[in-house]
Image 1 (tube, rainbow, N blue to C red):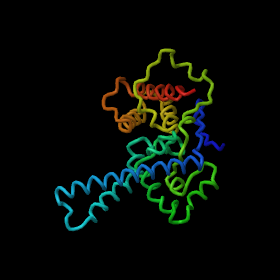
Image 2: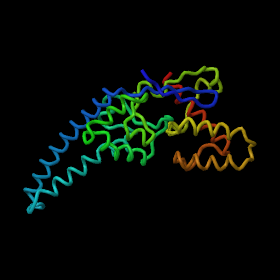
Image 3: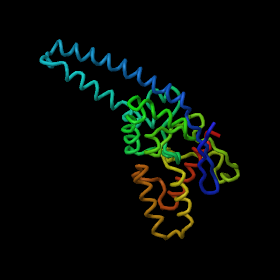
Image 4: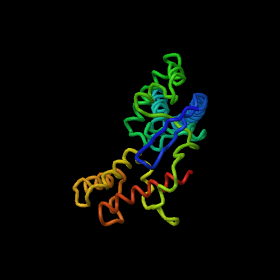
Length: 243
């Protein structure tokens, strides 16, 4: 099976196994079934409310518009607020990620959703053909957004010598679980920046940026370099969890 290898610095290699075309179709079918059940139930409830209140007495069209808007926004909302997973993807243990392993931005989720019209039935399933022809099983929306759908059981599978992590003590306890949303490129940048002299202004600037990205208002560490080293160690700790 094809794999997307990510290597950074001297210490980590991650192999991400793309979800197969069959698995992606299966997840989509599950999502369609959920959307169908949800739409039917919601229409029934709204119709009952309308019978009691007469809110849509003149036309039932607003009912269908409300349900349509909820259904059409199902995929992007699920992926944005559920770490790249719709209910179908969650059931089949898949997730949308960037090709570098990081969490996609809202813009990336929206772009791949908007291009589903080119991937789906409107163009005779062109997305399936594109997935079959590329190594990472990406549809057109994925290629444009720089994303891929991976199997979670291989996510963060690390092939690395444990000797390179011997600075992590046996009883090491991480502080910032949100570091798992950082990409390997970002961790590598932090590591290289920490090679600069302690009074280099770029260390402070990078520490402030890291706090902003990770939503850390008051770090436990007093100095910028100690804070950045904690981020690197926490990232490595979580990366090793699945070995």
